[in-house]
Length: 610
Image 1 (cartoon, rainbow, N blue to C red):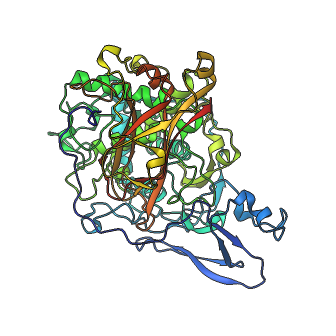
Image 2 (cartoon, rainbow, N blue to C red):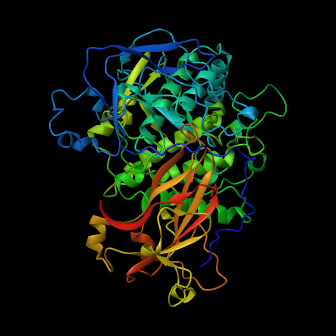
Image 3 (cartoon, rainbow, N blue to C red):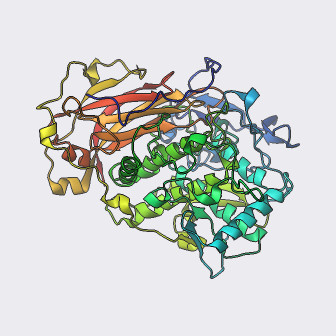
């Protein structure tokens, strides 16, 4: 089996880094249960960064009892009635609840391997206006803001956008609407700046990525960012651009973000971008750290197949698209049912790393989550990521339905709104864009819809897959270190399923317990049933490529290893590789970048209702 896709140079590597400390691994559902007592214990929840002169002391009348490895839902039974439904503390509520962001914030230093040479501050706490948190109120204006493709724009749209960004950059740095403070929002939320203190778990960080919080959090982030910019130029119709990288015409960095060689500086330009990827270089939506030796035409075709894979084949059910469940008490560094969504681990991560500057110690700006918000291109990128949610829903495919779990609906965040008020927002209020008074110019389809990888010609395939270097799942001793290509024979739950069965249930490959250094760029690719004849190379355009798992540096939780899971749709892949009759699927995991400390704990195939 060929383990390579389009020919690449050696993957980019970062500078030597310090080794991880031997910090104990925290279980997924470590519970902090507060006993009732009349004694008062004063403790500091967390510390502001040195440049934010606020310390938050909070009275706590309940010391903690730590009970590891117990599912919260079984707690009442396990304690034999010691705690009842009426006296269980409110801290055990399920939805993730962001605390007061101005008083419960700590320095986000994880994800920054080379702190000495970091070009952005790790002090990401927002300024305090000493205002109470208000409830969110839907906008009542009649005007709907229409977000526009950055590559196809009017002069008026560009001038308004530049004027708004310039106004934001001109604000004092300690203003909650300043460019610096808006950039810090992503750093704080995505690099462990906040803990689940309001849920009763002050020692467990909140992590936006690798779960079902990814889409709604970023939607709210952009919602307020857009409205702040509009207010700065007194324009209630102001709308953000989106980097339309799912369209061939938009598959380069848009011109409006280029450096002005002559004339005044462009407020949309950021110096910390990969010089190799400036226009006219075509984006690589499956970027793995190395450069492709291919033509623009082939790269575009592979990009379109990647979008199709992320939205259709690997996003066939709600969990696969949004990511796995993540609730109060869940630790981001633990094994569990959390998994990364298809878009997040796919084109989203690829574009972050493709833009980031490899000459910097930490791949600033877009190449690291703590620094991404300093590049105006980040917001156009995430506007298109947000648009992927709309495109996915509007496909009208069975299984493409919104989340309805109360733990997701009632998860909440706190932001400064356009009026400098602290506002608490909930997931349940963001999935209908019409209520938020914005839309996208293009909300359906695209050329990627016709980019399902072509079915493999049987003439190009061997009669069977060689099992000489293939292990069975039973032969593996988990966790398995993924420091070289690993080929595994995995039993399928059913073969030769009918069209009716496929319409009701999707066949999914699950890679569980993916454990990795959260402060490094990590990527491995997954190929299934590759039996192409000698001399042929499997690429992201081909049906054997199931997809990849990728992470850019972010919160390593004080240098602890992180854990996630990945899901890959097999129903179409098996059809297109002529292997529906096979009792076993041969899965090849191909590490690309960050293989140090990269392990997996389980590989299996399941049938998932859609």
